[in-house]
Image (cartoon, rainbow, N blue to C red; front, side, top):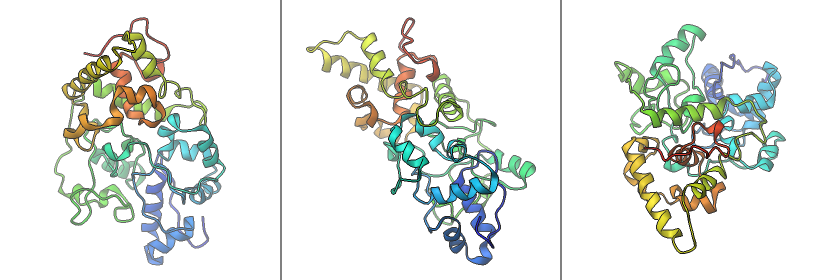
Length: 322
C-alpha cells in the first residue's frame, strides 16, 4: 500500500470495494477521497452494479503485494468476477488478468435484477464484529442468486444512507454495513424460509462462486450458455411450423412457474417480469451469450437440472419443474 496510508487486514471473502471503503474511512484524517486516489490512482464511486471497475487493477496489485495473494485469488474470492466469470468471454478474462481492460464491465441484464444496490445480513454484522472486530461487505451477499444469508438464513437487506430510502449505492457513503441508517432502525432480523426452487437458485449461485476450476475457462461455461437450448430441444419436438407456438406455450408455463414459486423476488420489478424480452426461451436459444446467468439458471431449474454442476447432457430423467 502507499506510504502513509493505514491499511487494515483483508477479511475472508470481503469485497475489495468494501475493503477500499473501510480503508478510506480509517484514513479520514487525510481526507478519504484523497486516500482512495492514493490507493488506486482514481477517485471513483464504489458501486454494486459493475462487476469490474477500471481502478481494480491498481488496487488488486497493491493487495497482492501486501497480503501475498495472487491476482486470480483476489478476483475470484473478493470480487463478483468469481461468480460472473463462468459466462464471460475468455478473451476478456485474459485481458482483465493482464490489466488490459480500460472500461467498467456491467453484467448483462443487471438493471432488471435485485442486485444493483449493496446488501447485507444484520446477523453477520454482529458476528463479524465479535470475530474480526469490524463488520464488512461479503461478496456472497451480492450474488444475484442470493435472497437470504447463506450462513444465517436471514433476509438480505438494502442499506439506507441519510434520506436515501431506496438504498445507498456508493460505499464511500456507507463504508460498513453498520454505518447504514437501516441497521439502527432494524429491531429484529427478518427470517424467511426459502421454497425448493429458491433454495436451488441460491445454492447454484454459491456453487458457481465457490468453484475452483479454471478461472478463465471454467467447467460451467457450457451449462451457462448452451445447456438450456439443448434441454429444450430434447424435451419438445419443434418443427419449422410449430416453433413459435411451442415457444409461446412453454414461455407461458415458465412465467407461471416463476410466479408460483415466488422467483420474481430475484427481480427489481416483479410486476414487469413478463415484459423482460431477454427472459424468453427463444432469446436463450438463439442468443445464449447475451442472457444473464440468472436466466440460464432459472431455465435449467425449470427444465429439470438437478444442480448446475450436473447439468451437462443429463436428460435421461429430465422433467419439467412443477
